[in-house]
Amino acid sequence: MRFKTLLFTFLFSYSAVSQSNDTISNSGTSWVPSALTINVGDTVTWVNTGGTHNVNGTTTTFPNNPESFGNSIAAGWTYQHIFTIAGNYDFQCDPHASMGMTGTITVQDPSLIQGNNIIDPEVYPNPFYNNLTIKNCNGYQLIIYSIIGKLEFSEIILNDNHQLSTAQLPEGIYLYEILYDNKKIKSGKLVKH
Image 1 (cartoon, helix red, strand yellow):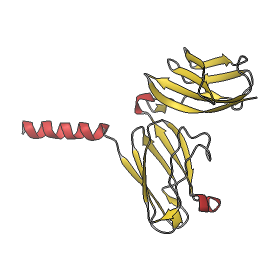
Image 2 (cartoon, helix red, strand yellow):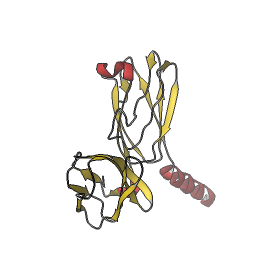
Image 3 (tube, rainbow, N blue to C red):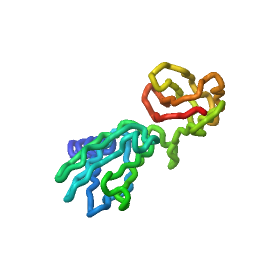
């Protein structure tokens, strides 16, 4: 009996921390489900059940996506992506986006959940002028690069509502990363006017 109890405890503990695989399929010109919430490290599998479709979650189409994902337009495919960066993602089927074949995926990092609240770091406004606000990032590292990859700024944020002076940055496009415990939590593009 003791062995069975230990085995059950081990299997239950393992399943609680293991990654999951969620499936999204098309139904005509709709994604089912069209909204999904997963954890960092989970896999999403899109299944084309009929017709000519694709998955487009690129940062070219959706600049606020933390990273790009997607496949080519074709029939009869299965596509998988492992989400490693927390944040909100949009995606669409390019030929049918105007018909509502769009979706969202919220990727949460369980280590950033306090009680029932998800800590979602924010960097705003975007576009910005001479100041940025960094919110919900106490103890996180903010790194800003130029579009060509030159390090422009790196700082540990020491409060939950930090004001950053960016007067020294010339106008242009910048990339940012927010790190916690050396893990990338969020990234994106910023535009300075």
